[in-house]
Length: 341
Length: 229
Image 1 (tube, chains in turn green, orange):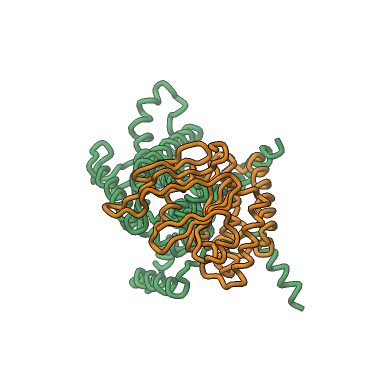
Image 2: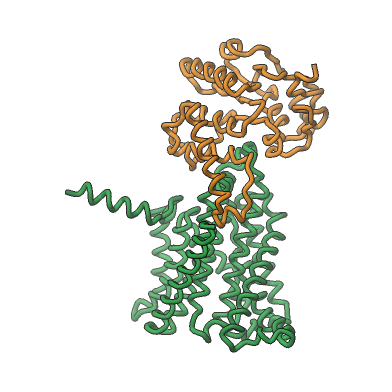
């Protein structure tokens, strides 16, 4: 009972912090920065979810944009195509009201997450027998297959893109709450997974598959589980993306997006949740911040140079396998103070 | 007779393409025995281990363990039924600590759903606590308690060997398969290892089958020896 109350407390507190932060930001900064923040949150979510597959379980997947796309299109399809059919019998789903919009977004999120997860299962089951570069190529291929399928589906706009998608959250000025709420969920999920002895199985598969197998770890199951969870979270991010941008285009989900997310995971330090989180935010914000004045002509040059320098100086990523944890950080600070004079 | 037999290998043949790596081998190991398996390089000793632990399925013949047939069962299922192994070339989870290595193996006998894990329910916290205590206790018994939080790749060679045995023991096996446990050790370390093997056999009431090249070690501790050629 105490446990349950504690958990509810954490959720309420997180929501409260997000709502207050959202209000402060919306009132005080330009809309452009809000949209950059939204993108930062979404990419950080993608990076942390891919880190579950690439970093923690050690399966090199580079088709993450495919699952992002599934989420975006399924979410969009609910709001624009399916909801109008249901709304007559369930007037509560009428958009335009605070409750209706959030309820709709929630349903879209659930559908998008589940569909992306199922796609992950479909892709993962046959392809996770492969290792390393082979798996990378297969996932890359599947990512493209998903994009091409969408490109040829006329019902969701095909190459013209799927627009408009009703802006469920922007209208109420709280896109940040949903986006960062999702980010918190992904981070908490990954962290709890790695922290328990059960989650060590995922690390065992990364370290040595044969040994893991010989120590009683059902490696296939572990790999598929990681893949499905990672894909599902990418799908959730896709749903939010579609509803924040009020429309999606197949081009947003091409190989470039997959590679960008993979870069974030590698740069953050494969396996490090905090690393992926930080890299996701920095790599999204950096190209935008470089739009100032005379720098803007060279922004992609600077960006790529920075990447190269980063990888040369810290090939293991910003954090390597490690995490930043607040308690340890504080302890270290205190110890330093004690030692100082 | 059949009550006593823990592991029996009947007429097992393993072919890779046309090459028979192991042909018509018969071995049985009784409960509580310490049996040695020797033979020249390439005789198929490790292949035989792989056949027992489910890495390969024999082309012909049967492997049965503790009264049930193992052919075609997955390695992780076989470990669960009580047969654990070490590897000829050490295969620890390198980036993880000694404690984590043991915990992974000890995980085999417990059930926690993903739901428990993600929400950190009281059930999970209790299981994690038990597992932690069990693993630390095992490390203590194997004289590895001091290095519990050291990355396993940073351990000395001898300690890595010992940790690998500890990890196998964490699955609570009935039969322990040791694949060249003394490879790369100096005489002193070998003597220590012999003591250790005897000791864990007593303490965990194990049956042990070991592959070894070092005749002194084999003759020193094994009760029966099979020769593969």
